[in-house]
Amino acid sequence: MDSSKIAFYLEQSRDLFIQTSNTIWEYAETRFEEHKSSKLQADVMKRLGFEVCFPSSSLPTAFRARYGTLGPVIGILGEYDALPGLSQKADCPSQHPLVFQGSGHGCGHNLLGTAGMAAALAVKHYIEDTGICGSVIYYGCPGEENGAGKALMIEEHFFDETDIMLSWHPHYKSGLFNNSLANVRVTYTFHGKSAHASLAPHLGRSALDACELMNIGVNYLREHMLPDARVHYAYLNAGGTAPNIIPAEAQVFYAIRAPKDRDTRELKERVDNIAQGAALMTGTQVTITQNAVYRSFLPNPTLDQLLIKHLKASTPLRYTEEEIRYARAFQLEGSLPNAELSIDPYPDLTLDRKSGISTDAGNVSWEVPSGSFMVNCYANGSPLHHWTVTAQGKASIAHKGMLTASRILSSAAAELLETPELLHSAREDFKKARSAVL
Ligand SMILES: [Zn+2]
Image 1 (cartoon, helix red, strand yellow):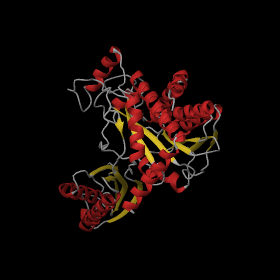
Image 2 (cartoon, rainbow, N blue to C red; image 1 turned 90 degrees about the horizontal axis):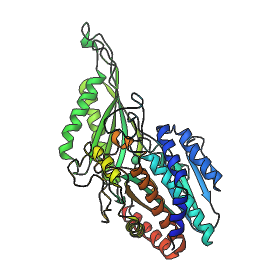
Image 3 (cartoon, rainbow, N blue to C red; image 1 turned 30 degrees about the vertical axis):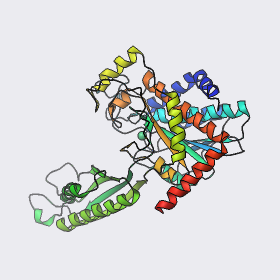
Image 4 (cartoon, rainbow, N blue to C red; image 1 turned 120 degrees about the vertical axis):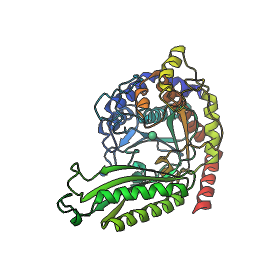
C-alpha cells in the first residue's frame, strides 16, 4: 500500500480541511442542533463527488456520504457537536468566554469530524488512482455529548451497509482508543408537595430534600463500587429560587459509568434503589428516566494492530519552537503542569491503554468491527471537556493532529480495501469477541 498518494492529497487540500474545522469551531453547535456544521461538511462531500443524504427525519443533523458502489465498505465516523458552557476565546490561556455561558468545542469534535471527512475524501482519491475495488462512507454523527447520537443512528440502521468502522478522538497523547467505559445517563425527577416554608412546613414534602438525600446516599455508595466505576451528577432543577417555598419538583441528572455494560446496569440499579429510598424518606415520588446508553468499546485485535502500524508510521509528531512555547501556557492549566514536555510528540503504542472516557463509538463497535485511536492535538495534560481544549481548537498543533489522524484513518482504510485477509480476520475477531460476551 503506497500511502504517499494519501499524504499528497491531504497536504494539497489542507487549507480546505483547516477552514472547515475552524468554521465548525466558530459555529459551536450543541447536541442535535448542529445544522450549520453538518450542512457545511455535507456540502463539501457533495461538491467533491460523494453521494450525500440526510436519511432520518428524527435525526436531521445526521448524514451519510458515500463514494463507490462496489467491494467492501469502510465506514469512518465523524462528529461536530460542541459542549454547553465551554465558550472560550481562541488561543487564550486564561478563561475568557467568547459568549457568556455559551458553548464551545471543549472535546475537539470540530477536529474529529473534519479529519474523518478528510480521510474519506483521501480514500476516494486512492480508489480512483489505484482502481482498487471498494467503497467508503463518511458518517456525520450528531449529539455525541449527552445524547449518544450513534445509538439512535443504530436504531435507524445507518451502519448496516458497512464492513469495518474506523474512528479517532483528539487528545494530548497519541495511541489506541480500543476501550471505553460503558455509561448510562439517567434523570431522577422527584415530585413532592409545595407549601409555605415557614407558615405551614408540615404540609410540604420537599423534592429538593429528596435530591439531596439521594446524592448523599450515592456518595456513600462510592466506597463499594468497582474501582474503575464513576458516578457524577448535576442538578437540572433545584426546585426554584425562593427558600420560603417548599419545592414541589426537583431533578438531578446522573452519569453512571463502569468498564462493562453489565457492571453499569448493576450500578444503575443500586442508584435507582437509593433514589427510591430518598423518595420514601421524604414522602415524595420519583420518576426515573434513562436518557442515553453508551456501550463499552469492543476491541478488535486485527484493527488494533493495523492502527498501531499506521500510528507508528505517522509519529513522532514534529513541533516548532513556537508551538512548544504556545503549549507551555496551556500545560500549566492541565493535569500535567510539571511534565518536562509541554507537548508530547510520542505515541503510546501499548495495546491495553486505558482511556477512562465513554463514547457512543462504543455502541457502533458492537454492530460493526471497529478500530479507534487518539492523536495528540493539545498541550500535555489538557483535560477534555475543559475551556483550555476549546482555546486550543484552532491552533497549528490541533491542525497537525487532525491531519495526522486523517492520514492514519485513510491509510488504514486503503490497506483494508487492498487486503481481503485483513477484512476476514477483523470479522473473525468481531464474531469471537461478541460471542464471548453474549
Ligand atoms: Zn469527544
